Length: 469
Image (cartoon, rainbow, N blue to C red; front, top):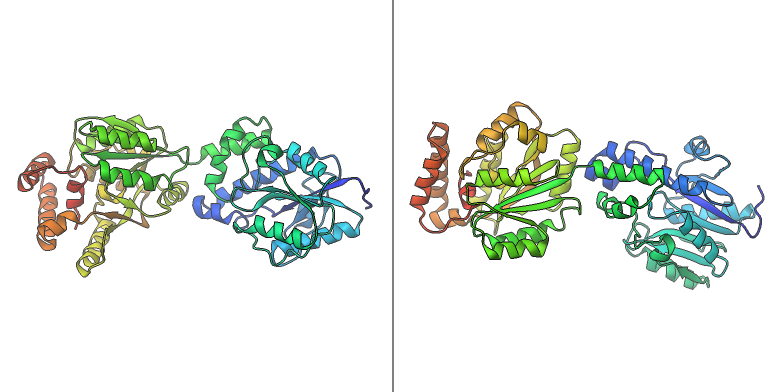
């Protein structure tokens, strides 16, 4: 094949979608089959843009073994397999082959930037008429597009797949005497979107753009993104606005824009509502038991997954992603491992081990951040109308139906009551409460006796914490 000097060549670097190949960070978040489905959708989106390209298209599969597969993806596309240990070496190889064939202006894209479109590609090609190299920066410090009208310098030592890539590419071009143009994302794609889809949250950040894109491949991506589990976090509170602020601040980095936060207050505290307003959480106020408040929060929510977190809890980093993975794998409900907050001591370690062993066969309590699919929660009848042991019957019903899992990530709970009452005394009283409930003593009566033994304000979370051990 002979290329004309004034034509630009579009090169698509891609991997053949397979289970366990590509999108491994999303595979970790959502599972391997979800990552495979997303890889196929992203590839089709890139191919749809390539079909509108005026000029030669080259498909560069990651393996020579996939040459025949690549040849079937787009009629009239040229196939040149990648070679090299890293992306820099692979770009240098494909670039060298094409320039040996007479190609001069090369625009290179991957398959993980659906915010790009045919207009962006054409803009990059036009820019190469005035500059040696062109780039579209990515939000994570990489690039979503790179092009050159002269051979690339050695790219093998660049920090690929890091946030330093953009700066390193710029320095490399400067050192080689190549002029560079960085197209603003808004100019390149007509929107502020500039994301590689490396994580599920990256795709969710693109949904507002995808909703405005009429192309079938983008509609399919949007449908896939919106089919993944949405988490509704329900947080019961009573005089917990200080702890609530810390929890909502933490959950802000755990949840996506499609998830929701619902706080149900027992006392209609202005401070609590102010915290909710600040963090964008929906605020409800109902003077009732904790069990009823959590049921009300569940009914007010819209997500397919219900996650009940107490205000004084601290959840592990990645807890929400772990819930999504378990739900996609077929779990119907579950809970997190138990850990005390604060400095490590031998008594904490022993009690944590005992609690985590007990919950494998017994009942994990609400301070272990219980989660349910909405269907499982509603079918099992929700929580009991109580502020003590309100979850026991629900969990027993869920467990009998299967799909109840313990996640290895931890939720930390306050040891305040243990430290106040004494670790052994508190643990003994907890067991007596549990035995009394198992023998049929009403939870309301047990809660009244507990409050009588502990006069003064009691938070909605402390009763739950006190059931443990």
